[in-house]
Every structure is written in C-alpha cells, then in structure tokens.
Amino acid sequence: AGVLEHGIESTRRAVLDGRAFLVLLARDAAEGQREKVMKLLRHRVTPNAILGTRRELGKAVGTAPVSAVAVTDKGLAHQFVTQIRSIR
Image (cartoon, rainbow, N blue to C red):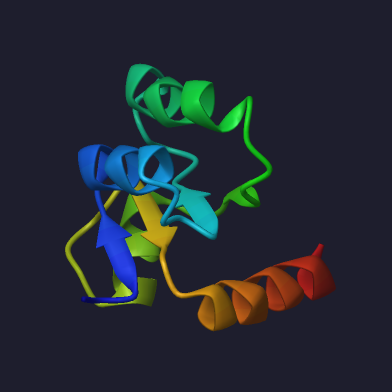
C-alpha cells in the first residue's frame, strides 16, 4: 500500500478507517469538499493543515491538482508535521 491517499473521497476513507496520520487540504478546495473532510476530523486527533493551492498540493505529492491528501505512514506524517510547525 502507498503512503498517501489523494482526493477528497480517498482522504475521507483513510480518516474513517483510522489510517490517516495527517491530512492536508488545499486552501482553494471547494468549501463543500473541504467541509466533508473537516467534519470527520472534528472528533479525531488527526493532525491537519490547510496548505497551499490544489495545484501546489498536487505538485508536492506528484499528482495532478488535488484538494486533499491523507498521509497514511506514521513516520512520514511525523516528518511533515515537524516541517509544517517549523514554517508557521
């Protein structure tokens, strides 16, 4: 299995299945799409961030523009969280 899930539905599934250790959302994602993921995250301790545009997020993970990404590898998620905190 991969270490990333791309797109709103795949990200939602990863959150629901407890496989998401970090969720990244694009700031220009459609509000309704972003809310689908945020609603699931409200009652969980999964780290999450709104970071970059759909194009930037897609480029960062090697895909076409994407609204959401779930990191399903604990070690990689920890590295990302550390980097995100250092730039904020």
